[in-house]
Image 1: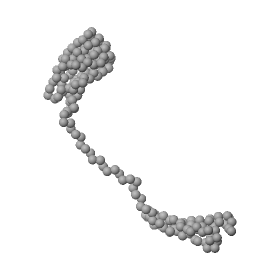
Image 2: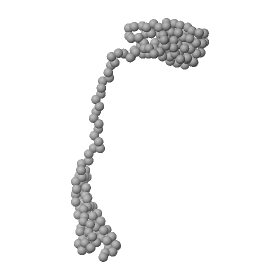
Image 3: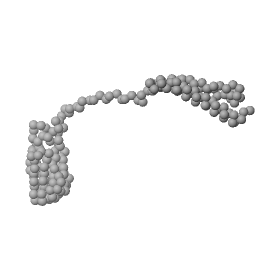
Image 4: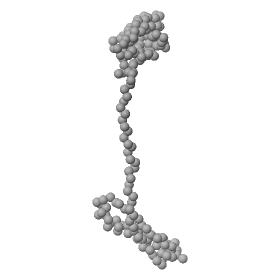
Length: 186
């Protein structure tokens, strides 16, 4: 029977022979490999002998060339998405009726059936929006606006730069007629 040292020595010889075969094969093909990418890999194929066969009939390692599969792209890019042209609304989006209020005091604003929540006025304008839209182009909608509360000064503006209403010394209510004009997004 063979000892473990003999088996290890034979394994080392077989590995050394395989390394020499691969190195020799690489040196012969180095000029071809420099001009083009490698198309194959060298794989060492060998019969693994039993310890008794290795002593009686050593098998030299055999280097064979096996073609590598072509590398596929990781994943193809997604197909382009067709751009849908924006749809024009059949009806213009009309702006909401609203006032910007500032001043000093507390007020509520009435417009028709709508009554705003109490607004504590300060130096910065606050928006009071009504649940109705501005009128369609070509029309004007007059509406009575009632401002009630207690305030030393109430300054009201709107989205139209020409509108500005100032109420001073408010104790109770004050009213005026707002002529809502179109202000659409079309």
